[in-house]
Amino acid sequence: MQLLDGKLLSQQIKLEIAEQVRTIKINGGKKPCLAAILVGNNGASETYVASKVKSCQEVGFDSKLIKLPADTTERELLTEINKLNNDDQVDGFIVQLPLPKHIREQKIIEAISPEKDVDGFHPNNMGKLALGLDGFVSATPNGIIEMLKRYNIPTEGKNCVVLGRSNIVGTPMSLLMSRKAYPGNATVTLLHSKSEQLREHLKNADIIIAAIGIPEFLKGNMVKEGAVVVDVGISRVPDASKKSGFTLKGDVKFDEVAPKCSYISPVPGGVGLMTVTSLLLNTLKAATRRHADK
Ligand code: GUN
Image (cartoon, rainbow, N blue to C red; front, side):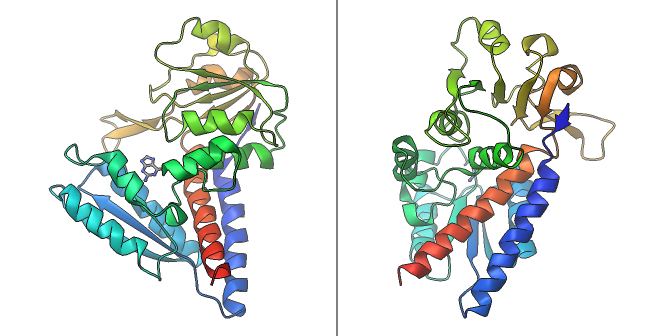
């Protein structure tokens, strides 16, 4: 069994990005700039956004954090988005999800200019992904693809099961694994809450991407010998022995599943770190495109 080491990979990729930023600056260009909007005070969201801002600093990007109170109205948030759409200093931006209940998430996503939508959530970018056109692919699936590529995991003709059909992970992941490319060209099965014979599908899977958000859902007896398992789960489970009061748990029961795998990604230290790194890659792409157009 070999670990898919997100920490090591994300460090390597960040060095590569930093090198490209240096080249941009040597050539008289502007540093890429990522902005993030955070509404309210969801603990997990605050941690994720802080890590995105810190990663910008590590690679030499500019960053901008816009913190808004939980009672921000939809209209006020749309105004902030409009400002960022028109801010020439900002190459790409994200609105951290989930949003407070009184704000319609889809309305917000659709207000972001597709050229600055480095999360890849806008229907324009999701549509491009479905059609195999060049747009922004959302960060977590993109990070997983980068991970499979850099570990040379064979995917062509393999049975790939994606567990979970969220817009952020499961759906784009299933499109990426079935596209005509490497990594891709897999036979993809997308399993969800209404799927029957889950175990049969899983037992035939050469590659499993677990993204259902149920801690330790995938058990050892659900996985075939030699499978590649990518764990996207990152649930906060109460744990009184921890200073923070919680432990992070993936969707995979690691101790049982790992001995059967050829490769497996751990939680933490796996996909989560790749997500942040691929957001940086998307921002670099957005910046390069915008400045090439000028
Ligand atoms: N919430 C959980 N994952 C993500 C993500 O990738 N982007 C944004 N904007 N919010 C999230």
